[in-house]
Length: 550
Image (cartoon, rainbow, N blue to C red; front, side):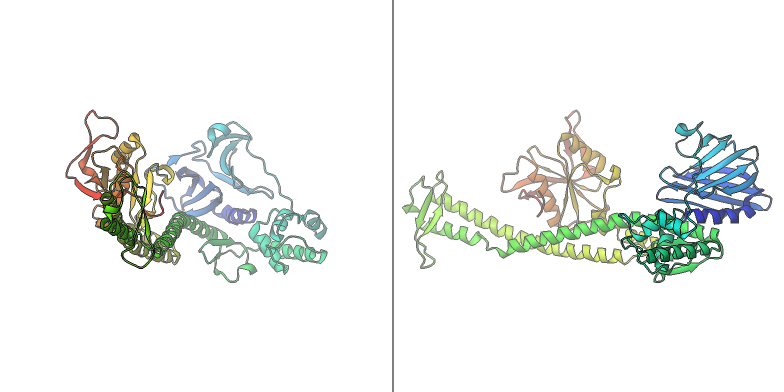
């Protein structure tokens, strides 16, 4: 309601006594889509600050003159130094006119996506705050008085319920009432503002009486600001019955209430800009961890193949002399139970003993994989718990200051869930993998991306990785700060990713070079992606991706 017609009219009445007769001393902008106009006289200065960026349109007044020394552009220079002779509002429209000496007018239009401030002379725009190149020389927007039905019959004629809620139908019938005031009229009529707008003649008569009581209260504004459970401020010129359950603060003057309402609205907008993406990222992480845990628990409930492989190896070893070379399978006497013969699949290119050794290797890898899976499940459970604790703590925050403190105090824990600010719009062009310990690995997709990842996006203290001796991608284990110390399991997980995206993918174990990014440099005269490393270590890992990755 801050830019509602009734609010602008009340502000114009207040400002006439404090601004008319003063000189426009400066016009400038130091915030995007916000314009400041300072009026001064020997007794002091007063600044109007207008915001024309939807959805929060506003204009309010503050005592004094507070222009920044840097990054502030001077505008409307033709108007500076002229005396304000009149301040008026358009008839039933959200336009303010500040008439200056010399027949020049500042026209403030606070509605719709094209809200703007114009400097006008003889019905021609001399300059515009927004889109000046397109609008200079054109006619300014003309006021369009909104319908304002005065009688019950006129109200009923404009009340159209089709596809609307009660509050929406009241807004259509009485455009000078915004959604807040229309909802209040409905509540005063004993109706639910969000209910379908179909209403009996008796209910429509009650609605009109509700509208009339709101109009009467608007003639003697009693400004106040409500605050809902999410902390969003709700400004109103009248007491709201439908906001009884909200926190309420009353003000003596409309200008004071509008100024505070704008301040709180801007702070809340900034709060949501910081809060919402972080909440969404933590919710997404919590969901991913829950899904991974389900998959891990399902895998853990399945019987390991290691015992079967080992049994097959023992049986092949004990009865190797009975198995001809080139056989694709063997029916062997089960020496470990009274069951019937056991059929064992064979690789016909291998001997019986070589097949036995192959099954012993599989049994060993299966047991290693099961231990690794158990360790990763424990890590994932811990990470899931940490994310849930972060999410619960975040949702308990109600103020911008507390949110900023939260992001600062827990920067290391939150870093894996925040997008890289270097990327436009937070988009990361590389493959991206979240590890069970909360760290993140980025991997290139081609030689050009390898170069870009290593030399433009990796921090000097990040851990750089590449499969040793074979073609492959560059992978980087992202660290939240230079003192971060990921455990050995995390580094091995990252190295496994580097091995997976290389020619060593099919190997049971692959060597991977690991070095701090600061010890990696481009190979002189080499093709994109070619590097030279110093102070590297080599890890022997099984190529693979984190659970749930593809």
